[in-house]
Amino acid sequence: MTAAEPRAALYLQALGGADNIEDIEPCTTRLRSLVHDPSRVDSAALRELGAFGVMINGRVVQVVVGPDVDVVASEIDDLL
Amino acid sequence: MPSDEDAQQASHKYLKVRDYLVQLTTDELGVGDPIPSERALTQRFGVSRMTIRHAIDSLVSEGLLEKIQGRGTFVSAPRMDFEVRLSTFGEQMHRLGLTASTTVLESGAVAAPAEVASVLGISPGSQVHHLRRQRHADGKPMAVEEAWIPVKLAPALFDDGPPASLYEALRLHGHDPRWGEETLAADSPTDEERHLLDMGGRGAVLRATRRTHADSGAVMFSRACFRGDRYQVWVPLAPPQTPVTPSGATATTTTSKEDS
Image 1: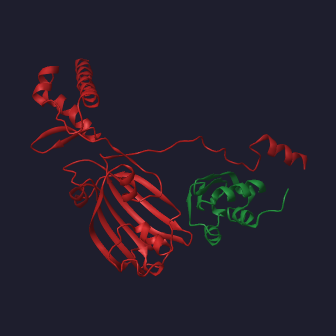
Image 2 (image 1 turned 45 degrees about the horizontal axis):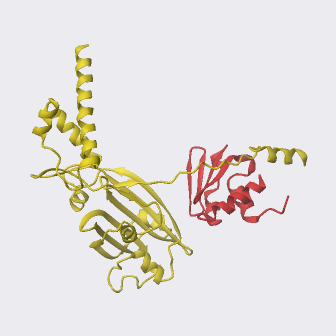
Image 3 (image 1 turned 180 degrees about the vertical axis):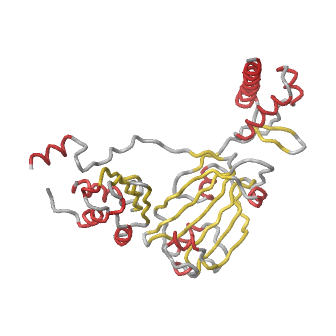
């Protein structure tokens, strides 16, 4: 495995770590993830990473990333 | 039992009238043509005036027909495809071959309302350029739009009066709109919106709420309210991407993890 992209690792950490993720996918401008425990998601940290918004609805977390989301998602994919 | 049968027969008659009107408007009549009178339709189908009205009203609310007070019911212009992309009203009308015009309702710098401030990531009460406009296509009101832009992003944005195109003005001030997000919702118009959109007594509107981003971040928050009977939302569909699951959704991932 190649060295982890720092950005993806930080996003993953803010989402509660790899073991908190049930699934994750890019959705045009958003990173959409189903997590096991939404209380482990750190919205403030995600915003500091450059997210433009974080919506948590039940176990679904949507992070507004912008057009870069495909890149971020594939970097996260590499880490999972 | 008899009431069930009656109801069934009534709905059958209603559908017959409706189908006839749909076929007539799509195949035989042109935009702006009147449909046959209620009296003529009553005689032709041997049904009550109420059934005829019911059928006409359903097509009016679908936007196929339009009622003009004191004149009758006419075939309306086809709905416009609502563009799901980062374009402006003027650009959309141009692509549809229509002439866009604008009536400015409000313009100036105001203290940002709480929702606007939160969406734009600025402190509540800080100054924002505010513009509220009535938008027309070929002279007919189509939408009421309202937009907010932080003053500190472009203090001189409104110096020559409200810009004709906010996106163009943002470009000129170095904040090219790059991407955005929009939510669409059906709603009832307020009395003022109903009046501004020339909607008569009934009908729904389509509300579009948008945040526009430049490379520098969120630059504009806007709300638009479109006539529900003149628009339809066209959305291209592609199969969903397969979500990634850490436990290994795909065989290759699982294998490589087990191998290592």
